[in-house]
Length: 154
Image (cartoon, rainbow, N blue to C red; front, top):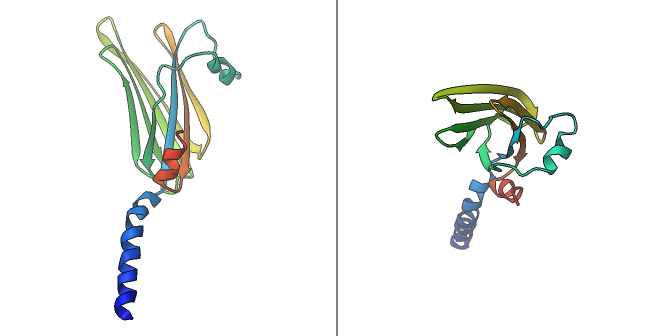
């Protein structure tokens, strides 16, 4: 009887062990990035304005809680970097955006930082840079597992 019990415990442990690695809480990060001509005005109706436009990029990623996640998009002439880091329990996150653009052979950059963004909140970064306006719509949402975080991207 003891042997049967131990075999059962070992079997259940082996079956459940792989699933426990997916139980780690994560921050699901969704960014929608727009590069707009200067003539477009960013105002309180920003969602309505952006619905009419095509995003330049739409990166999504999962980050462990209290760890930095970095999204870089660009080439040799333009670079956008977005860094997101949650606190230990995922109740809020901090975000910073850096834009770099080569103008007349020299790199110019702008950095913006938003602290203590509540879990699930959507925020917007907006910066005028040379002849365009960059808008990043950013949402960070805490999920109890990697599986739930991945499902949120669908």
